[in-house]
Image 1: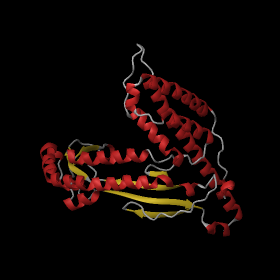
Image 2 (image 1 turned 30 degrees about the horizontal axis):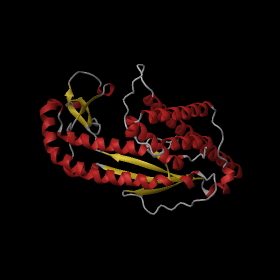
Image 3 (image 1 turned 45 degrees about the vertical axis):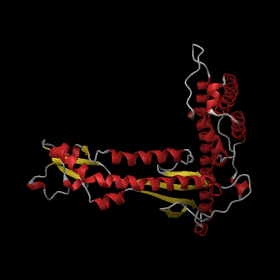
Image 4 (image 1 turned 180 degrees about the horizontal axis):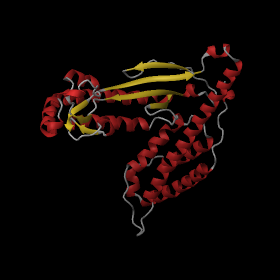
Length: 335
């Protein structure tokens, strides 16, 4: 399959993909794949034996310290690592990366592709780019703070690592500053048009494989959305139900807001156009209309009514998940 790639170091602008009004649109009329790479300076290094005179011609692995292991052994059979630059400023950068990943996970869909490759609906692409723009803006001062304490962190490592310290483990500040970036690539793929000139049988075979792949992705998306919805609703029903003593359980606002966020993005993420799941989501949306977590804490009858309604939603989701996946999408209908 041929692949189209567009690099984006800044929020993606000018993305042009033809849309259709057909109910079952091909995958790339509804979504795009994003490769997200969160670059950082690694802080783990390998520790090996001191290189003896007769071993000095032997290549030393990159980013390897050679000052600690003094036992007589084949170092290729043992892996000992150390952690460098253990400082709050570095951890703050990792925390930002984790937060960004958590925000993106709420937008993307399962695709069966390798880690770091995300399938995202086109209708949520602007939200993704807003998250990435905010992350890049927040990253810059965090990196500067880390660079300011970098010499002190090296000195602390020298003190604490003792014989395991190796100055070669530490690049210059300019290299450190450039090590932290958020990089995105937007990709789609399709069968190359030249394939038909080689073999008609081959292109028919690959077209069928492509249809199967698309159908698998759409089925996985529906299953994933159903499972996440079921998890959120089940948690809400549990928190709205009294404990064994009949007392109200502790209730966090996120129990409601997480479900509301999911429902708010559902139409954009329902690429398989599953009608049954859509009806259940709309039912939950109606139940949550005008409700906020504070109301549920203060008004017991309201909480009870919502618990009863959401229990019915949960029952329908139980039944939906018990059904084997069905083919919702016909490639030929969208052609």
